[in-house]
Every structure is written in C-alpha cells, then in structure tokens.
Length: 94
Image (tube, rainbow, N blue to C red; front, top):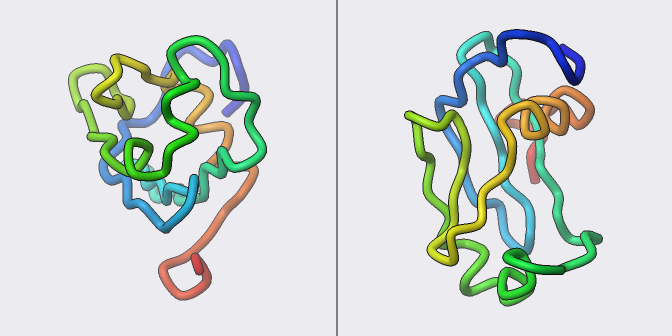
C-alpha cells in the first residue's frame, strides 16, 4: 500500500520493543517495525525523546493509530508504510 491509497488496513496491535521502536501488526497480516530512534523531535513529538514517555503510547482503534499522552499521534498510512518497509515476524523482531 502506498501513500494516497484509499484504505489502510486496521492496526490491531502495537508492542513496545524498547527504545523508540514499536512492532505494528495490521489486520491483513502485515507486521513490521516503526523505529523512531533517528527522528528529529519537534513540536508535539519533542517530549517523546524521553523513552519513559515514548513507551506510554496506546492503540486508538477508532483512529486506526497510536497516540501518546502528549496528544501526539501518527497518520495510519505512515504507520502502515513503515511496517511494510520494515517487515518482521515474532521470531525476528528483536
């Protein structure tokens, strides 16, 4: 799936892997890693440099994304693209 595709599969699970890495799983079986370790931390994302805060994300099913207590969230399409480009299985995620 690429940017602009009309339907992004539902995000069904998000698991913190340590640091700024999250394993994402989608309803269509796609699973992959979101690695935000090299991100430029600006705006609403700046507080998430603190791993203690970063790891407090929650899956928000009605928005099909993950959200943080700071109010930050990421576009579902971006999450799916990251998972698709960094595929993993439960055996190879660490």
